[in-house]
Length: 408
Image (cartoon, rainbow, N blue to C red; front, side, top):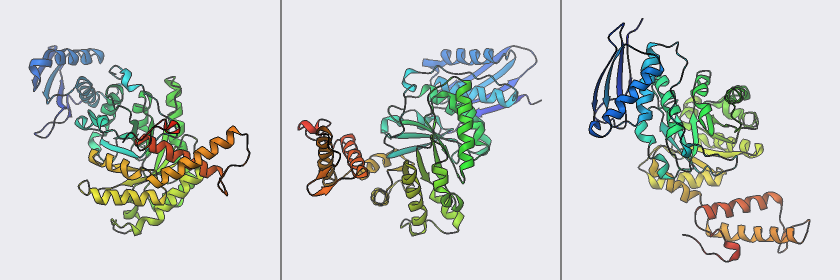
């Protein structure tokens, strides 16, 4: 039997985290040794929290060594639970922090997903203020950003973050690991109001079915009625070929995105900023998503220092039909939103179409016309979306029909 286990992070660059070592003993009660940067303010509170966690897991004899760099209670709880379960893997109980009211927000199928910010699932310092940057979505990543040895720790930390961190108005997303390992992630995170699950390297409809059915079973066991939506990630030649099959695999698929680093590696070429090597795959994703009636979302732009390159990449993505883009740094969020915003010409044309549509409806007309041109329903739908996007970007006042001016 193993008697000592550790969890968490320490080091000069680590903040808002802790490193905990648990050593089980046969007798002697609980011995707690703690070094903390916030000892004067929260030392006794943290000691009591540790005692509560140990009591929950019925641990009566142990030495606990804690190095704290300002971890919040939900982080300490996660690190201590991880260390205990590394010692006692048969434990099934979960020590859950309170579900805060700010973590109970809902989402919708058709909300804006212009930006989605990836956050490493095992690094709490990136989570705490991420919502203040106003991304449309925040992705708590359990896959590429987490070392294989830390997958268990990341699951528990992400679970606690979903219950404690105020991500403001951002959609709450999680990228699970490649299947079948990702099914273990679902068991931990699904009951805690995650809005969207991203499936990495999705290559067929069967993978979507498996994730969807697993999510539904978990929600049923926990008596949760709100759906958890799915965003498959196309990252291989096979996935690109089967993009439409994947897009229509479940009614809970709300968007299709792609990862070009893995895709270009799979087809044996170097990824370039010009992107000729991935044009077909990106077009395939857009067409599959549009045919399925869901959102096409572009890949990340990997150079966080190149704002002009990011802007050009977003404008290209918009021209191809994408509605959003991935982010790997908060500084990319606002440039992405600005580049995806409609132009003044697009807004003016959309306003005219929407007004013509509404006038036709009021008159009970079955045919909608603007000038000498007939307006098809897809054109009206696109115009309505442009107007909504303009309002969201404060390029158009929400009361524009009554003469309201721009909020910009």
